Image (tube, rainbow, N blue to C red; front, side, top):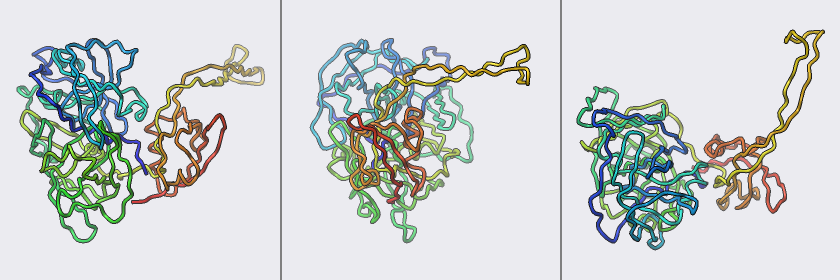
Length: 446
């Protein structure tokens, strides 16, 4: 069943020319030793507030990208971009390079962390469609350039990130932590882990994995990068997302476990990608796949790029199940709608505001109009429970299990479709101005 999660933002960007030197992210005041910011966690992805040339925007923090990317620009946006040149970009997927712009000398700030000379790669068309898939407006992605000069602590439980000055940072001893050396290739961090693919026996295979906070899946593995890395017998084929160069195809499955030194995670969901969709990513011959936010969110994560290290410590999410969308529905945000809401106010007559035999109670009904979110079905996986029930691409969702859809967030809808095998789902939709009701049960395939 197709996830509405965003595996596609793991980019492998190739450029037709070499980038000149650019500025560095630094604390605004040299005396600062750390800076803490809050973030939103949406479908496992970290969304942070970013100021670009005085315009407040929302970006995803993605350790899997080497460049700062801006992509959700419309004719109504007033972002002033400096020193613009045309370029071509190539990323994951099967298509051709896409047209983009390179803009230099931009001021980018995250609270008191500032770069006065940041280069931005501006994708003229929103190939990712992240905003509709996340339910909030997403303008771009930040990665290596922000992380490289700091020691960064990410706490998925408290939704806080702390940036430390590496020259003044004094690490505390942590007996329950594991430290991993980071290997960088094209400014992207890799670690060595072990995976057990077979349910028979206990054989572990060493794998080199990109550390990718911008991929919401748990694990990606590239088929045939090692003899034993092949899709298990139990799987289903799916489009895993969209890359700059087209759809990313692969098989969804599970493996017995992934081992990160002493930390063992059992039965994680894994996506096996074919060679066509990962042609550019496979240029690093040692790479066997990625670990994404489906793994990282189970830890407090320290990125120490200056010293080429990463440290992990288990959090309360560590023992959570690895779930996936069992409905077959790819639901996206469909803008705002005006909803009429009824308000009932109670008034008690008399001086004593406690109800008694001498008081009378009046109920006054009023109405208010509020803008609420709307959701629609972007895709329905062929052969899935939703497809068999008759739901179609383009249906606008009115209710899910008798609750108005505007009372949900996109993340909550995803959770409903992941809850448990055989769960009954009732959906009311509107199609061609006609209201229709459907019912199906979630079906576990892996």
